[in-house]
Structure formats: C-alpha cells, structure tokens
Length: 138
Length: 227
Image (tube, each protein chain N blue to C red):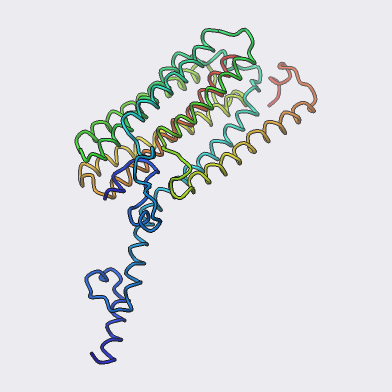
C-alpha cells in the first residue's frame, strides 16, 4: 500500500511503474513533504500580505498600478498553491492532470476575457442612463 | 486430464474472476491473471484523476461566476459599492483562516502517510475548526450586508457578489461535512486504503477551494475596495 500512502496526485502505483520501467517514486517532488508544505505556506503568506498591504495602505495613488500588481501576486500565489499544496507537475498521472488543467485554463481565459470584452462593448453601445433613472426602473 | 475436464476448468476460471489467484493457473490463463492486476492498478489511480477532472469542471463553474461578476460587478444601481461595504480586515482574517486550514490539512496528510491515526484525526479536526471559523466570519459579513440593506436583490453587483462568494462558501460547507464524515470513517475503520484514497480526494478539494479563494479576495474584495 505504499502507493496509496502518499498524499497528492503525484504517485503512481507500483505495478504501473514497473511496467514503464521508470523510477518515478524516487526523490521527485510530487509527494508532500513537511518542508514543501511549510515553504508553500510561507510563500502564500507573503503573497497574500503584500496585496492586502498595497490596497489597505494606499501605497500607490494610481489604481491601475495597484490592480496590476495585485493580480500579478494572485497569479503567482495560485501557481505556488498548485505546486506546493496540490502537488501539480507535468508528470503526474502520465501527464493527464496537467493536460486537463491546461485545457481548463484555456476555457477559463476564453470565458473570462470573452464575456468581459463582449459585455463591455454592449454596455458602451447602450443608451446612457443616469443613476436616478436606474432607480426608477423596475 | 481428459479434454472435458480441461474445458470445465477454463470455464470455471472465467466465471470466477475474483478467485483467479487462488486457482492453479493453466498455461492459457497466465495472461488474464496479469490483466486483472493491471486493472486494479489503474482503478487506484483512476479515482484521483477522475476527481481531478471533477475539480476542473468545478473550476469552469467558478470561471463563469467570475465572468458574471466581472461583467456586473460595477452596476451598483445607485446602491452601495464594494468600497462602501467591504471590511478588508475581516477579509484578511478570513484569508488567513483558509490558508491555515490548508497547511493543517497538509499536516494531516503527512501524518496519514506515517500511519499515525490520532495525529491525523487531530490535524483534520483543526482543519475543520479553521473552516468553520471561515464560514462563521463569512456568514457574519453577509448578515451585516443584509442588515444594511445590501441584499442580493439590491443591485446586479450584489447579486453577482452573493452568487460568487456564496457558491464558494457552499463548497466550504460541504467540504466540512465531508471532513466530518471522513473523520468518523477513519475513527471507525482506521487508515485503511479506502480511507486514505478518500482523504486524498478531500485534500485536493480543500486546496482547490483555497485556490478559488485567492481569486475571490483579489478580484472581488481587493479590487472592489479600490473603486
């Protein structure tokens, strides 16, 4: 039951490994280790604290700069979580988890950017409406 | 051995696939025995990749809700905006709770791999408490908004806000229900292979919710509070 005893996606069953003749069970960082979890936690703590500080402390007068920085920190933190907590790598489950993730991310990007783009242009082409008028609407 | 008895034996070995190991395998049956082991090996990994695919579909669900919020998030209908409503200190505490619950779940998994039942249960309990704390703060925040008149019906911004954050909260709720169920299972049956697999699935679910929360606190709370 060695294969089942390790957390995360990274492990393959022994039988499969032998069949492939690859020694994936060795030191490759797919299994959670104490050091890995602590590193991930410390990194995400820093990557959370900085954006909160940027917004709460009004560090930059410019909103655009703050927005871009905050989003960049979020992207990095998501990658950190994926690697240290979800033990993602390109090899686990023969690469299928990574492929599924890549496909999902493609769809997510299309959904998000597409919706915001299309709806923004629709909004621009609507008749203008003052907040007062909006209140009278049912 | 007569020809008839050989045929009977083969038929038997085909009927009772589970008993295959116990039988003396005739020369022709070597390959099916190997095949059966291979099947088991894939079923073991099959659960985890299947659960990962579920998480990816859940990711798409959240992507659509994020897109809704992205489109509607500035339509306040002369009502309160994010900058008026959000209390970032509360959100920071919530984020910290969820982050802590992520690492305590990681510790539970480490104890599980060392086959230490009590420590595993202990870390799982701490994880559950952090999750419950997160939910309590979120519900307090929601009730606070509703008392101020910022109900989901008030504006498109609030509708999409409550849908997105509420769906995440619902996921955490079910995660806690699942966690408690598994704690009972582990207490009853110990850290058997089935329970280990279940705990691994919940581990992925729990860390995935933390990843979604990164998106929520960035796009909804931090960016909302700036406007």
